[in-house]
Amino acid sequence: MAIKPSRTLTFKCEKCTKPVQVFLQKVSACSHIQPYQGICKCGELKRHATGQKAAVDSYLASPTGDWSHHH
Image 1 (spheres, helix red, strand yellow):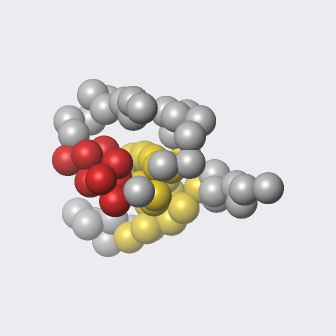
Image 2: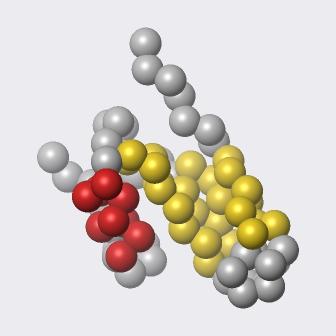
């Protein structure tokens, strides 16, 4: 049985240094990547992902909302 990824993670905002919570995105049911996204109170978008390096890199490098994972 696979370990479920956390639904939320908290990071420090790179713009204002306040805590920003990111939520697990429902992009893919596969185990290659678990993408997260959230918006800080200051309005800064924060994105994070865990999983396969190539999938994570492509997610973080893509324009917001323009990414999907394909097999």
